[in-house]
Image (cartoon, rainbow, N blue to C red; front, side, top):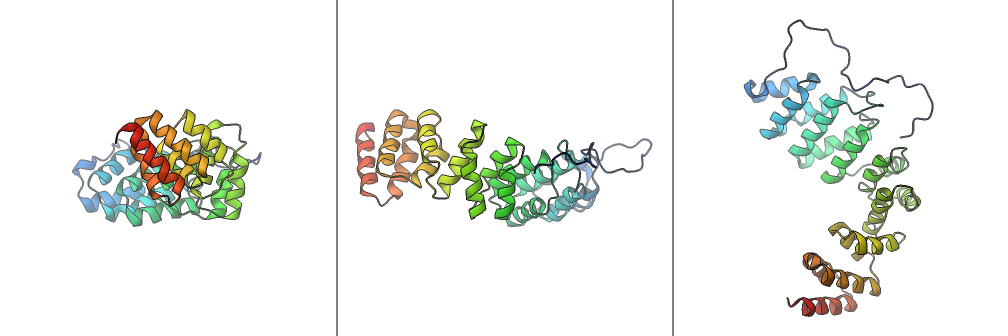
Length: 267
């Protein structure tokens, strides 16, 4: 979120919270820890050892470690306004690797509670979108208006509806950053909104992808089915996907275009 000009009480965040120095301290060897030992040390993992401990947790697919990973991330709540917190990014990455409903709920709680701040929000939102997290619509709308274009872009992928979210997405169609406008158009298409249709048509010509095809198919008019068919003929690698979205439509025009694509490509 925009922080304005208020005094940053957490500048320098990204380093762990102060801990007593230990002479001769060395990072733990994750491979030598039992599952229970590994889970037990995660919440207090140091910056130097957190990535390794989390990677070992993911390698062993320790679902029981999800609360410990969430606790590790929460330990640094309020830090990270200036740069990503290593321990938090490791924890969120670990949750993404473990996957499943419990990990998805943990990521949702961490974002919704504001435990991750600053540049780390972008990574958290990227993970959230990949895991299908359902974040509070008003919070997503806030992220869509963040000062960081990376956060705005990532937030587009988390948009699941709501009047405030849709309004923010429409505003982003005129964003100064192309990647943000593209993401906003895709999000609007997924939500069945046509405000970004012209952008989607342009992307179909210049940067076609599965996301563009599905988003445009969700709001397609008769001319859009033709454009999708032309893209399939022009780029046969996309033909299977285009034929799939054409086949899912109940529109007569889509069926006719699909027949034409098969005939042109001999499939």
